[in-house]
Length: 406
Image 1 (cartoon, rainbow, N blue to C red):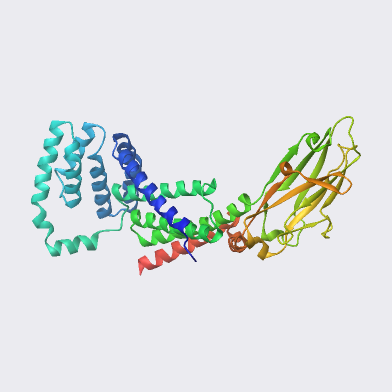
Image 2: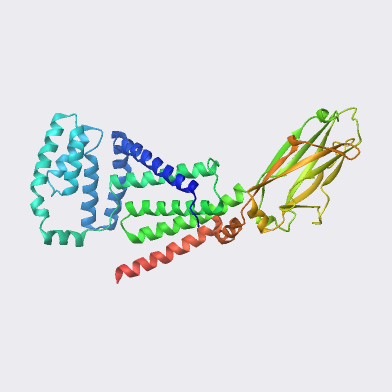
């Protein structure tokens, strides 16, 4: 796969977006309101989970992290309660780093003094931390827990950057080839997994969530190709007076996309209707469509090749429209370009043809690689993926329990 200049530029733009988002997330996360939400909901969930597991060290650890976050609480009273807690428990490097970070931002003099005293006591305990045996004992007991606020900031920044890039892709702000799009899709998936690894320390949980992410990634590709590469468009000219035919208009409906699924089928129709008025000048309006015959073929309702010339009755505007079908010639035709145009000509006299550019329309051509993606991902459609993921989660749960007991 050749990484083009466009993809390289996009990667640098994404890094720029990530840096900007990270700064924004940091400002938000350091605000008192964000800290209050984090303590009240996120940290409370971790503490409740620790109590449900009934593991003393995990309870102490989650409580310690909650009080560590509470040092940045919005209200002075909450910060004071956190300091009361640390006055009665052993401290560590995490507390020292936290205090060094937040002491300069304190506006309450009493809180600032208490934090400074606590920092001095914490720094004095560094000699104890250097004890190898103690470090090994703590390492042996330490469970793999959720990420810190700083780690969550990085993970959230990654995910928000992914969302922004996905929005840019969804609105076609940047147009990529299928190979480039798949490359970026895999990059986004890896970024998601990296974000999960940062905040989830238990590799078993990382594996479970990664499987879920891959399943939804495949489902997303399937859904995108099914929904984005479809639809119809309309073009209308109310009156052809400028072409010498007054009181007659034309309405064309055409497909927005042709895919590899349309090869050899009669799925995509083009309908041409007459908009008739009083005192029409002609009973028959003849259109001839110009198109690239190395890309498209026009067929009738039976799938037989047909002429690109249509004769429209102007005296029956309410009748059935003329219908023909378009389909790609083959897979190579879809690889040839990203879109193709059909331009109708109107017969203004015997063997005299005049193009009508206002009625010309483009049909997007889907790269045939998307059919391979659809075929691979179709089994991961949303109804099926729920069953598959439930089964995988159950088997993983059993395996997890067996390995833990052993």
